[in-house]
Amino acid sequence: MPLYKPSNTDTHVTSQFSLKGKNAAVTGGVRGIGLAASKALAEAGANVAILYSSTKDADAIAAKLAFETGVTVKAYKASVEKKDEINAVLNTIASDFGSLDIVVANAGIASHYPAEDYTEDQWREIMSVNLDGAFWTAQAAGNIFKKQGYGNLIFTASVSAILVNVPQKQAAYNASKAGVVQLARCLSVEWVEFARVNCISPGFIATDMLDVHPQEWKDKWFGMIPANRLCDPAELKGAYVFLASDASTYMSKFLKDLSLRYVSADLLYSWCKSGYRRWVHAAVRGTDFSSYYIFNNEFKSHNNL
Image (cartoon, rainbow, N blue to C red; front, side):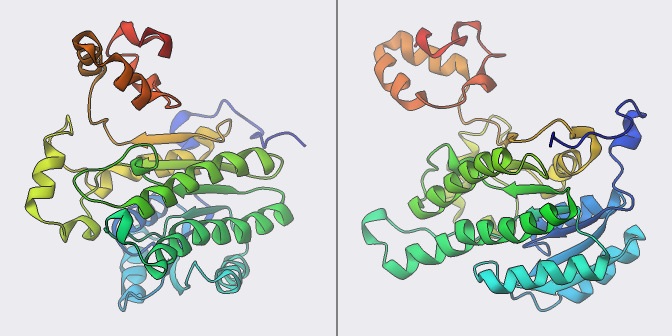
């Protein structure tokens, strides 16, 4: 069976972004990036189930979002790291809403320890939520999509999947998000007959997850981010709507890096000229370097390094 194709692919472009009549679920959907994604899908017309694990005012958040957008928004409690629990909740949502068209596997946590100091519990906590939880969410959604014959899965990974953040030490988080990116690649191929699978990798976003960090960390980040500021969660809304909508029906295995790279190609080129060619080549080997092409024609291929 080929990838789903709308009956009319040449509708007006604004109508292609509409999610009216669609039903969506967002894990970690009551805070930060997840709340922005939930709001975006609701504003585009979808009915939205927002999933949470511990937020005490989730029902109030859902009610407020429903009032502001005019669609159905309900809160459901689920721990994504528990396979049976997330499976049961997503199936309940599909039953309550009548179908489940879109699932955003967004729930995630972070911690910061030197790699040599991780305890087994600290390592497993990150992996169980960020990677295992993403897979159990995807698996539950995939079985629903397969039964329906269609569906749309969007992962929230992180730019940490492809680079090493500094000055914080977070090997477990980075490894878990790299796993999510590869998981998205795998499922986009395995499930192409009944689902589209895509992935968004945000950079530094102004959420509660970053608020707790010391100012010296933020100063370090700003010194490496060309935009010289954090991204507001609302600035991600368009990306989630695009991937959830018929504006991207021929797109699967799309790994959108929304980070603004730490360094430009011009800087890498200058490093090469300064004698650091081997170091730069090692740093970018195996990396999707295409985001640098527009900055410097010298980087048309890895061989130029």
